[in-house]
Every structure is written in C-alpha cells, then in structure tokens.
Length: 279
Image (cartoon, rainbow, N blue to C red):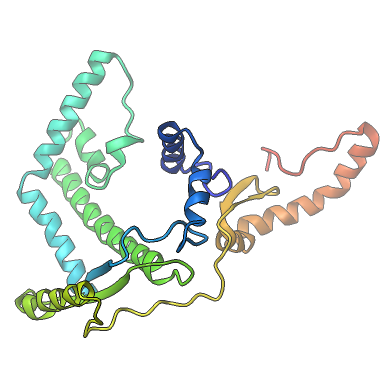
C-alpha cells in the first residue's frame, strides 16, 4: 500500500494502519486475497451481493447548482452560524483550560461548513459592518465549495461505477429528478420497475448506463521525481508533472550544473546531488 498511497495523504495512511491494527494483517495482504476471489479484479474483490444495482438521481446542472445554493441558505436560516459560534466558543474554553495552542488546520475546522467562516469566527474588535461582510463572504464561499464538492461526487461516481470494465460493478440506472412535480413518473415508478425486475431475474424496461471503456488502466503507484524532490501519484499525474513549468525549469537548471558537479566529484570524490534545498 505504501507504493499506492501518497505520503501526504494522512487519511488513507491512518485507515491503512487501522486495518492492520484490527486484523493483524497488512492492508495489501487483505486486498490481495480479495482480488483472488471469484469475480475479483485488479482493484479488489467481487460484489458482496449478486442482485445489486445503483439508482442514480440526476438533474440538470443549473438546477442542481440552484438547489445546492438554496440548501446553504436554508442551513443559515436554521441556525448554522449560532451552531458554529457555540462550538467555537466551547472549543476555545477547553483549549484555554488545557493551556494548548489553537489549531485550525485539521479535524472539524477543515470540514465544509466550518473553515469558510474562519475569518468571521476569529474576528475581534471589528465593527458590525465588517463582521457582516465577513459573514456574507463565508456564505458565498460555502456555496462555492458545496457546488464544487457536488461536481467531485459526480466525477467519483463515474470513475467508480462507469469506468471499471475490468471490475464487477452493479448496473447503474439514471433517474431524472430535475422536476419535483414529475417525481412519481420520473423517479418512483421507474425505480420500482427496475428493482422488481431484478428481483425476478428479469430484464428491466429501462436500460442501464453504458460502461465508459478505457483503453488501458493507468498505474497509480507513487513515482518520485529526483530532480524536483516530489512524489506524484500515478501515470497521469506524472505526465502532467513532466510537462509543468517547474519541472522543466529545474531540468534546465540541473543540466547547467552538471559540469560543476563532475568537477567536484573528481576533486573530492563526493558527488553533490542535483536535488537539494537550494533549488
């Protein structure tokens, strides 16, 4: 797993260590066993349930964006700010009692719905006008990141369920939830028909979404760039890094330094690495 998890991906590293603590076996060993099961693949084991499907509620992007922004407005009306203020106050009371420094860089303080209001929550001795401005900026940021997170979820669904031809995945059926007035016709009735047909081992009237064929699955192992002293994850990130301005600049710089390095090696028999902090 160390080859597949980026050193800075704290969450995945902790999860992998938890697996070892709970099972007494490495995460990679457990995954290898799952891959060898009937129906397994390069990504993991078979489906847990044979008769499974996914009902994906979709709607027009403009409608989805409006609903997400309205959801934030509704959260504000229901007391989001008071909840944040109360939590922030209790956190600082406990922090002062424990004589510890404030740390807003991890945990709940980095969750969506909290970090967007950091400036507002920590503002001191400012006029109501400035505080209200910071509050509105927090609301605007929350709407922006909520919409962005929804796009990430849509991308994850496509990659996880529609771009895995070499892995058993449940059939995905799209249901249009754009118009709430047409919910029964567009969502409830098709969903009931799909599930009922699958339970009878029949073919549903509605066609599932097609699998998006990929020519070749890319390598997701970590790759170290010795010139830039960074680690990238997978072939796609590596290709992007190789084309980046930073990498090209350091390559050019390292080539100019090579004659100097060779001279130093001859005189002192110690080769200074190209990758150093001075770059």
